[in-house]
Length: 180
Image (cartoon, rainbow, N blue to C red):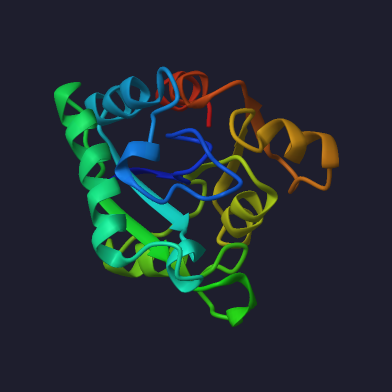
């Protein structure tokens, strides 16, 4: 079974310093949904692992998060793509939970639910916390320069072996080619 783990905000859709708090605010990054469809067509299961502290901060509720994800699923479906599973951490940054990236709780839950080893699984993110969590579970950290990616690269300190691509479409082509 081939897997790819993606962060959501800044990788699939445009990010916002004020959080994505409604379906109207969720807008895909050009080429990202097509990239997911290509990954699906190449036999990859696509799993999203996303920190969603806006819930813990009271900025939006579960019904709103579900509506945002429904919009994403419908947009993907129109292109023949799908997300096989969506994991999220609803806790605020100060909660000290095990699931909020850079902690590995979401990744370990993905491994448990799919009964798989995450060694060398491509894990695409735009922030250091995405890449650190990926590296901690033995995944292949992949930085995209969308979202916070440019700043993440400029700040340095990336896990050893991190691959960098302009966007999810470029990363997906690399993954499908078997190079990640």
